[in-house]
Length: 153
Image (cartoon, rainbow, N blue to C red; front, side, top):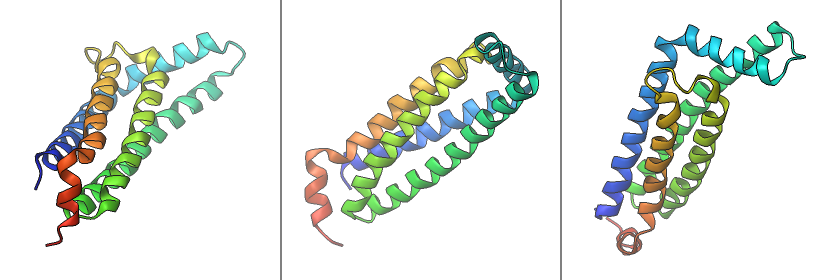
């Protein structure tokens, strides 16, 4: 197996660890995160009711968690295809990588009001996640991988 495929696998696994850390901060500091996000949203949207703001924060947090789980499953599936020497795995890794980076940047923007909670994990965690995903998505396109994919076991 080429080192680039091993690098991609390692970067994906590291990105999952970062996601677990982000989720851990959100879960263990849920009241603080909700409060900070509600205050930030109320400040940016003074005409919204507290119920609407609370509902929006709930949707953001639940949607982010659900989206992260789906992206993890898709990344695992792309890794399985890649390790089975399927070119579709390389393509899927790139697509899932692009979606994951977009989701990471979107999450960072959505939780900006709570970025200082958990020693800043909600500020730097999404950036680290995006960097790791970029490495994971780009590595399978290294020159030696194409030849490896063509050789069937």
